[in-house]
Image 1: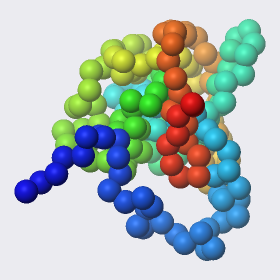
Image 2: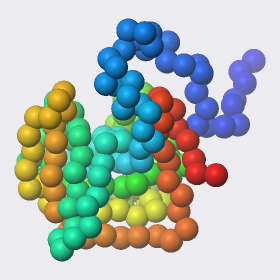
Image 3: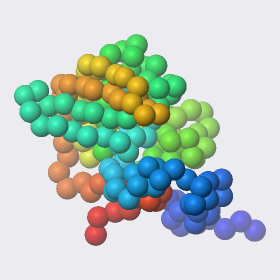
Length: 176
C-alpha cells in the first residue's frame, strides 16, 4: 500500500543525503546560508528556466536587477541568445516548482510541461505568479563560481497580497 503525503511540498528526507557534512563545507558558503534570500524563478525565451536565490533589485530610473546564476545552465544560453529574461518572485505554493527548476525534483516531459504558464516577450511566467519583471540583459561576468548578470528592468507586473517564499540554511521558509 502506498501513502500519499497530503503536503506536496514535503521532502522525503529532513536533510540532503548527498550534502557535504557541515564541518567540510566552505565557510563562505556556510556564511551565505545565514542570509534569508527570496526564491525567484528566472525564465527566458526558448524556453529555459532556473531557480535563483541570489537576486537583488535596485530602484532607480531605470530600475536595475542583479543576480548570480550558473554560467553553464540552459538558462544562461537562452538569456545570452535572447538578450532578455523574466524574473518571478515565487510564493509558498511554488515549492515543487522551485525544486523542479533547481534540478531537485523530477520534471517528466520537461520543466514547463507541468503547471499553467503565461507567455511574455521575456519568457514564460507561472500563471499564478504574484508578479514578474521583464529584464533586458546589460552585462554578465564571472563572479566567484557564478555569473553576475546585470539587467535593466523594462516591465513590471504585480499582484497584490502575495507572500514570498524564502530560502535560509538549505530550507524553504515563509513569513509568519
